[in-house]
Structure formats: structure tokens, C-alpha cells
Amino acid sequence: MPLTHRGREILSRVPGGSLQSTVGVGCEIVRHEELCVGCGTCAKNCPSGASERGDFFDVNQLLDAPDGSRRGELGAALRRLMQHEPDGPVEVPERVTVYRTIIYEDDKCLGCGTCARGCPADAIEARPPKADVAPAQPSAGVSAPSPQGVSA
Amino acid sequence: MGDDRTIVAFCCRECAYAAADASANARTPLPPTVRLVLMPCTGRVSPLHLLSALAEGADGVMVAGCLLGQCHYREGNFNAVDRVAFVQRLLKSVGVEPDRCRMFTMSAGEPPKFVAAVHEMDRVISGMPPLPRSGDGESRAPRHGAGAASGAAPAEELLGAARGAA
Image 1 (cartoon, helix red, strand yellow):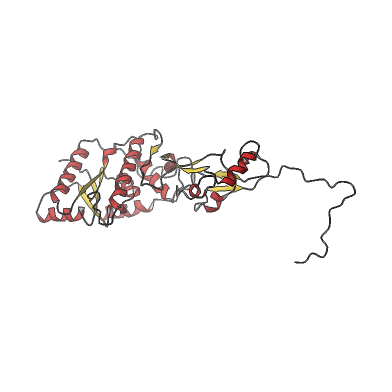
Image 2: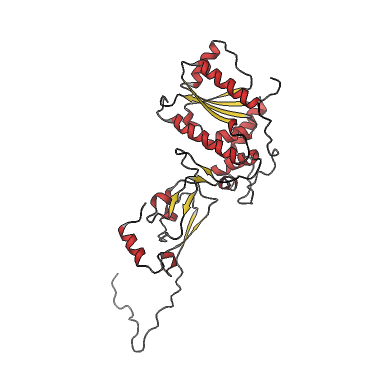
């Protein structure tokens, strides 16, 4: 998905041009490539275009896939056949949809976590942002108001 | 031909298998190397079928389907063409001859085309050296230890049982 007008506006006002560089804003996205099945859900839903379906496929994603997974079965067959290590990524024909490496660009990532929420294979982890900012100190003479008679 | 090479042919029920049936009715001899697998449509063929067949002992694997644009299920053969191309690129990247996996198209009314396809595949595979496969049963686990090895993959069990019974 391309970046919306509001998204572009936000990014342009953030120092550093990326929400990842801003403390306390945006989740840290961790991709586990060995679990990725290449469905493209993250790429379809990403609001900033940080996640995109690539035209190439890294053959090691088959060879290193966990046992019992679909990619693992292909990897097992390929391991029996292979004569040498793969000599590079393979260009994927148009109609092959699930064997594609998802390209993830950290600079464009907003840290919204939509990819992690939609991933069917739990291959993306969105770690909550660390709050590095020190908690505000109460100034002299002013105490934080305690909740009184707050109705539910 | 002396050696017992094996070619697995995934045939679509509508055109390729019908052509094969017609050629059998006409008593056209086929090379003994070819084994037919009936599919409803070549669109059902997955890269897993093609790679597993080669890994489990087939020297060549061919996909036979309807002429492009004439698939009885509209676009299945286009998908098969792309999947066969993908498998060819995978094989090439790991050092296996990509021509071990090929796709042929024909019409149900063209049994000679099916026979010619099988003979062509047989000719090409016979011209290749035998394919060395990594040892049986050894190193089934993923290379870098990602995930525990849980035994034989389901595809291998099915094909292994079929071979044991043959």
C-alpha cells in the first residue's frame, strides 16, 4: 500500500525522517525469515510501503525452513537433489505467488505493527517501543491530582 | 535402452491423459521409462510434486497439459507453466540440469503429440548422466539446525510405500 497523505505528512515532520529513529514511537519490527511463507499479507497491508513482495526468491529460505512446514518439505527435497550451494536468488515467474522473498525496508517503516498483526505464520514480531524518556518530575507546590469521585 | 531411468508424467485429465489413452488404444508403444500420474488439471501440479518426484528417484519429470488458452479450467495450464519455470530455475541454481523438468501441451485429439513429448523427454533424460542424490535418510534436518527433525516428510512416506509395494 502506498503511503497516505497523512502518513507522508507525519514522516516529513519527524526528525530523522523515520519513526523508528524516534524514541518511544513505533514498534521495533523483527522478521523471522525462516518462518515466512511468502503469502504477502504484510506487503498488502503495509501503509508505508516498507514491506513489499519481491520479484526474487532466496533459495536458502527453502533449505533453512523448519521441518514439517510446506517450505520445509520442498527444502528437504531440494537438499537431496542439490549438487552445490545455491548460486544466487531465483527470479520468480509472475503466477508463482507464495515463493517470494518479502523485501522489508527499515527506513520506511512506521512501526505500526500491522504486518505483525496480520501475519498468519507469526513470522513478524512487533516489540513495543522502549520508553527511554525519563518520567516527568513533579514541580514544587504542585502535586499530582488524586482521582476523587471518578465515576465508572 | 538398457538403464531403468524413470520419468514421471503429470497429465491433465482433459487433454493429456485423453491423448495418452487414445495413443494406447491405437497401440502406440511408449518407452517403458514413463509413469503417468493423473491430475484433474495441470494447475493442480505444485512445485512440491515436481521436486519430490525428482528427489525420490525420478530421473525426469514432465507436465503434460492442454494447449495454452484451451485449459478446460480456464488458466490452470498457465499456472503450471510458471511453476515448471520456477522449478527449472531452482534446479539450475543448485546445479541440477533444468531440463529434467519440462512442460508439454497438446490437445486430446492429438495423441501423436503426447507420444512425441514422451519420446523427446526420454531422449533428453537418457542423454544425461544419472543424478547423484544425497544419501538416503541422511541429513534430513534443516542445515543450520533450525527446528527439530521430526522424521520423514509425508510425501516421502507415500512414495516410499508405493515403491515398496511395486
